[in-house]
Every structure is written in structure tokens, then in C-alpha cells.
Length: 223
Image 1: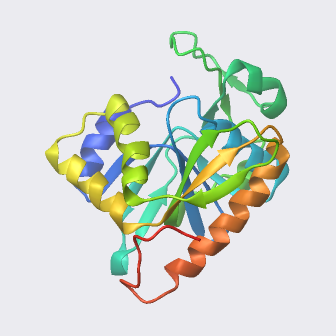
Image 2: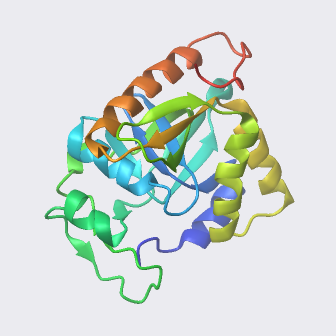
């Protein structure tokens, strides 16, 4: 099972200011960005491209925990050291990673352990500074463009609610999260090796916004 006790953990963390979200998360040494979007949009393959082709860290490719931190910060925590890939991406990204026997699941995505092969790159906790909303496009190179809080909501809420029980309080929490952090569209192209470069540059810009005084346009999209 790729995500054991997921619903139990979610219920426990909801009582403690946290929420499990559907999305991949990559990071540098201090800050993280969540890759959000519909199933099959390229979240997992983009996160795995960061492991294969850069020095970015990995916190998860399917579900991670976000909770309120000090001084209005949002903290993201890794829950599982696994990655689910579409079959056509396995050869490109999985390599010699150990595969989890997840034959009982019917979504058609083989699951792989990122530990121990990437043990030094699987991070536990980072400060979440924004969202990249992943969608495929036909061009070769990845492109970043501004996104709105409404775009973030539509990227994180429906897919999260399809996986987890979310009550009215959880819906409000997700809305506040979408409004509190900047976001960009990440249109992923066929050259997956370029994706980590684009993500790292976007993460640097989002970090710069996070360093501005509180309330100075936190919900505006990154340039």
C-alpha cells in the first residue's frame, strides 16, 4: 500500500492545524513549492525529474502534510518516501528504484521507493512558499506564467477532496491556503530535463516574495 493510514493521519492532523493535500513537493535547503494539478498532468514525473536531473530535494509526489507554522508560515512535511508513475514514465525516471508490490490498487500507476537510492535528497520538512500548477503542453520546453488564487483552489481542492474526507472546515482551510500563497502555471514540455531548471528558478522567485514584509501582496501571482 503506497499511502498507509492516510485517512487516519489526515483526521488526526486536522485537529492540530494541518491538512493532507494531493500534490508533489520539491524543495531546496529551506523552502518548498507544491506541484498541483489534475491526475495525469505531470506532477509525479516533474518531481522525479527534479530528483534525476538536479540537486533539488523531494518531499512527496502524491500526498504531503501542510500545517500552520509560526509568523504565518506554512510548513510542508513528507509523509511517504514513494513515487507513483504512469507506465510510460517508469523507464525514464524509476531506473533501479525498488518497486512496491501494489498490485491491489487499480489506478495503473506503479509505485517506487525513493529511499534508499535518494536517501540524502528526501527531505522531512520545509517552508512552503507557493504553488506551481502543472499542465502539459505541446512545446518542447517548460514555461511558467502567472496564476490566480482561484486557479490554485481549482488545482488543489477537487483532487484533494477526491482522495480524502474534507468537511466544511477543511474546505475553508484550503481556500485560505490558496489565497495566502502565490502561484504560477507550469506548462511542462517534452524535454523533462529542463523542468528542474524552470522549477528551481520559480522557487527562487517565490522565496524572494516570502522574504518581503508580511501582507505585502502575498496572494498575488509570482512574476
